[in-house]
Length: 176
Image 1 (cartoon, rainbow, N blue to C red):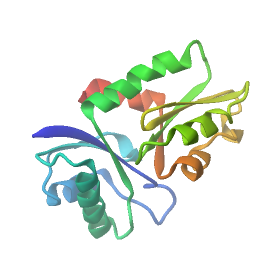
Image 2: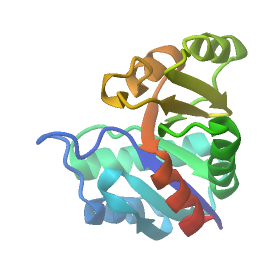
Image 3: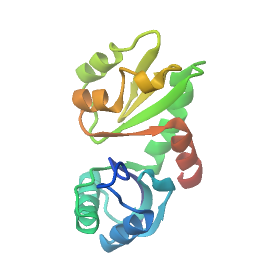
C-alpha cells in the first residue's frame, strides 16, 4: 500500500459546490481507499491504496466524489515524495520573495513550451516558476488584483487547483 495526497478542485466555493470533509472521507473510503484523512475545508485528502496508476486513482476518486457530492470534482493526486519536493522547491523558487506565495497544482505535466510561456508572463510584481506539476506564484501586496492567477495557469497548462504555501508546507509536514 502506498500513500497519496489528493487535491480537490473548486469545492466549498459558493452555495452550490459544498463538499464537507466527512463526505470526502466517506466517498474516498467507498472508492476502496484506506487510512483516509482530510485537512482543512479546501479539499485536501490523504489515503492509501494498492493502485499505482495516478490516472486510475484520480478516475476512481472523481467517480466516487461525483456520486457523493452530485457534481464533478476534478482531483489531482501526488505521491508523498512529490508533495515533499513541491514544498522544498518553494524555498528555492522564493529566493528572498516576501510577498504571497501560492502553488497551482497541475493534473498533467506541462510541456517545455508551455512552461516557458507561463514563466515569460512574469513581471517585477508577479513571478511564475514551474517545477514539475506545480506552478509557484510569487505575488506582491496587491495579490487580489494579480494577473497571474490559477485561472490563467489553467488556461495555459490545463486543470489545476491552487493552495497557499502555508497549506502546502503543513501537508508536507503532516503527511510526508
